[in-house]
Amino acid sequence: MIEEIKNREQLTALVNEIGFLPFFSGRIEGFSLEENISYDAWYQGRWHGKIHWDAWDWKGQVLQNKELVYGKFFEKKAGFISLKLWPDFCNYRRDGYDFDARFDDGLASYKDKGIVDHIAGSGAMLTRNIKDSLNYKKGGNKGFETVITRLQMQTYVVPVNYEYSRRRNGDEYGWGNCRYDLAENYWGDKLCRSAYTRSPEESLDRIIKHIRTALPKMDEGELRRLLKA
Image (cartoon, rainbow, N blue to C red; front, side, top):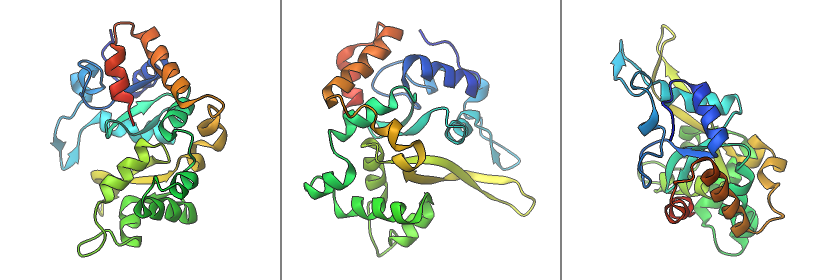
């Protein structure tokens, strides 16, 4: 049973306790921020042109405070992962491969490599700058969202902040532009690779054991399908 989430602090405490949590409702009924958040903190439309959606702002805040990892990790949809379980997510999702080894073995595309290499050379970058630099625009490359989602699912690239455009009076507007970085650059080699001594399957078992200790009624089969890369 998940208690109603009213603020970022409660979200952080919950994810640290159970290990991970999808943002939107999905495969497992009742297992998401959307289904367990207070009415006041969920999307409430706009006031004076600004979006009022506390939960949407929390993702950038937990990233900047380095409280939780956030990204598209659950069936290509967004969610939160505790720092305690992040090493096992990296180990399981990478299946024994750092990115260069995956590419060398023909398991990553040239588009994947293009984004990874560009971020590696330039540092954390906003979505729009990556698209401009790599010609993801009309008449150019296609499939940016597919590639960037795949790199998140594999834990090589992660969001590190969401940055907003501002009006002349300084007010923020819009949905925010995601800034991406390589996971090791932002979270550190030690955190991302500290589970490499285990097999990927051992890491998956540890993730499942952790959450089922906190939420024993969770169906293991559904969890395995949710966690599949």
